[in-house]
Each structure stands twice: as structure tokens, then as C-alpha cells.
Image (cartoon, rainbow, N blue to C red; front, side, top):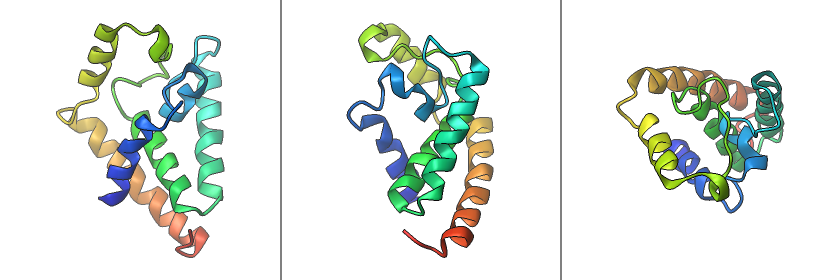
Length: 126
């Protein structure tokens, strides 16, 4: 449970919501296609898991969790907070609420596999 709470805090890391870091959240910047964003997202997740650091595991889990959110589905465009109207941000938040059970189940299943692999590969490192 602690990893999930830490993962939620990723949204508040300075700069994490910038357009350039859209892939951290399974989204894309306006210059990317969904396919390019998916590739960059996968590279980002793998690079974080490869360090065997718990802080990077949290970043990877956040990205995986976002991948299953309806608000992020299909690597939607993220313009960053500077160019996003507050009403669009509110809509984005509402779309990924806890009432979206199917996304939560999918991300929980993904978490189990990722954490198990991370523990085996990293020898419970970090």
C-alpha cells in the first residue's frame, strides 16, 4: 500500500507535469504520435525498473498505474499545466477517480507481476 501512496506523490514532483514528461504518466506531448509515446513510456518504465532502487520502482509503478487510467487511455495528449485550462484538468482528475474499478483492477494485476519480477531481479534490492 505504501508504494501506491508514494506513487500518487509522483504527480507533485516539480516538473513532473510538464509536457516534456508526459510519458511518465502514459500520455504524450503534442509532438508525439501515440505509438512513439508508447515506446518512450516502455523505455521509461524499463529504465526505472533496471536501477533496482525503490524510488525508481515507485516512478515505474506510477507510470504503469496511469497506463490503465481512462484519463490516460491511448496516450492522450498532455499540454502541461501551463497550457491546460483548469476545467480540462478537473475533467482529467474526474476521469481517473477511484470509481473507475476496471482500471484499478488492471493496474493492480500489472503491479503484482512487476513487483514480483523486480524483487526477483533485484534480490529485494534498493
